[in-house]
Length: 200
Image (cartoon, rainbow, N blue to C red):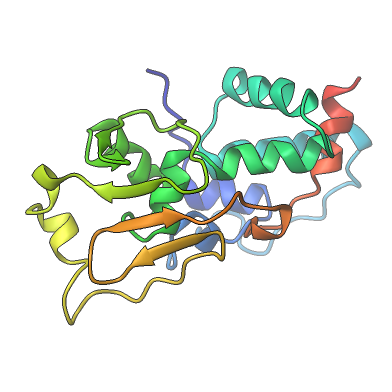
């Protein structure tokens, strides 16, 4: 399976993203600290930058991202917004937002290793698209793991979930209340530039 192994801090700086978006609160880079005067980006460069940004945040490779775009283009509504909603509905992204993982990369790995169930059935596909009403939970066989034990009890970290998700704070599970919307995307992106890029 192909993996995106790009350095987080370096890539965030190149894409003008906060490392906090990726779940890394203290990541910094000393590379080119003062920066250099950059030439004004061309229209194509701006479009490409937005596409690379979304791919990087969700950990997607080109083939999978393009398939999301093709699917979004066939859906009613704005293609760019539907594209982002498809990315938000990924199981690894939901696991991250429910606070079961500190980063999307970790969430993807945990899903791959079969640590989660959807409506009681084990799912190990990070790209699984969640639907309203589904319950995502840590598998019974994984609850004794150190990584999940720290998420319950008095010392458990405080988790702020988006409005479309609900987490049971006393148990390692959460529910999809509704489909996410464009407003639920928690990083700056101009999705219309991605649509323009693919429309050429």
